Image (tube, rainbow, N blue to C red; front, side, top):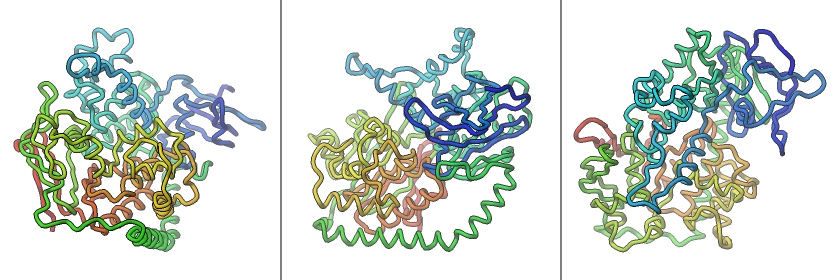
Amino acid sequence: MKQTTGDYIVLKNCSVEDRFHTYLSGLSWTYRPGETWLVTGANGSGKEHFIAALGDEALFCPREPGGEFFSARPGDTVCVSLENAASLIAEERRRDQSDYTEGVDIGRTVRDYLGEVLGTDRKALIPRMGTLPEITLTGIGPILDRGVKFLSTGEIRRTLIARALLSQKKLLVLSEPFAGLDASSRRELFAFFEGLAANPARDSPRIILCTDRYTDVPESITSVLEFSGGAVSFSGPRADYEALLARRKAEAGERLAEERAGFKTAARAYSREREILRSPPPETPAGEPPLIEMEHVNVSWGDNHVLRDVTWRVNRGEHWFIRGPNGAGKTTLLELITGDNLQVFANDVRLFGARRGSGETLWDIRRNLGIVSYRLHLEYRMVGGTPVEDVVVSGFHDSIGLYEPKTDMEKLAAQKWLSAAGFSGRGQAPFSSLSYGEQRAVLILRAVVKGAPLLILDEPCHALDEGARTMILDLLEIVAGEGGSAMLHVTHDPAEMLPFEKHILEFCPGKMPMYKIVERT
């Protein structure tokens, strides 16, 4: 490694590799003082391997001729990513001792988890952790004494960012930091990012922001590094990149319209074929009970009242948009339906006409559900060698992985959906070989493949790039148009509300009632 004066990071003709693979080659990039960089690129572009090397999970290796790698702060980098969040939840599940103790093992609290990076001042800082500016910034003061495994997706993200800030590392790599955060949390994080860039103290951390989509980009970003097809496709000033985007948008407008039309045609063709391949569901008889009935539901963790006096019904064919800030109760509501929250048995909750706790099994419930969630994604990452086609087919069996032979109908259904969603020819690729966003798209196909009466979509576009996000929203419109499945769609992004979602359940924490129902015309 050569000494380079003044620059933070210098790459000249470098590769990114680990013990087993070389992921990127021919990288050249310089990070200079006064610059604030955004690293971007579509899912699977190579961006994720570059981020891994920045976070010391892979290596930058100089190559001849003229190869050079220099970092002014070797080993002084921390990365916050979706993968970090998944690993944290997996670790908490491994630590869970609930089966061997009385009551529920809450595991590490947020306070304990953050305290692990406080160093020699740990004992003094832990009791007054709620007063630290990093805690105030991320808004996690109210959850410091909650178990990590009980956090919502957004709360986990904010906890990881707080831990990174408390670590005193000098280079923070924030991958999709705004994903899963509500509007208030995004504004606070934006303000922090802008303040740090505008007034960089000598000992304050530098930040590299990474995102799949060039949206919600802070004004302080000066430079952009874009990856495409496993290589750098742009490196330079922000103004030049935005001019390039404008040219691309103009050139791609007609082509994008054709691709979307082709996607919709393919998906509708599959829908018609499915009616031939499978017997149509019986018509709903008059007086059919609601899919979901909740009467005065209450859920608490100690003194923390997550749900209070919630009464709610979902009828067949209804499409609901569920919104509210992080920690408002959205995830808990969904867990009462999927069977992942045992407090359902202490409440009046009816699913598909039967009260929970009346003898039904978890499989009886999930037979009627198609689910996409962060936790499902985590579980599927543990069997990442499963072929993509088998992941989709497993939706017929409600399993994590596939443990019995596929029928011809199941194979054809999976292939048609994969083709319609842009995965043609990739059915035998391992699930783990896909980018995070591509994995989520495949799990959405898994949810819709069996045509269940109820689809639960918990942040379905979380971490998808713009192209994949557009494709998924188109797909959801087509699924809704078939009329067979009701949808519960949870998202923080109001732009993802779809025209067919006529019912809104909005959580209002701190108020009574804590929710309101809005009907759209």
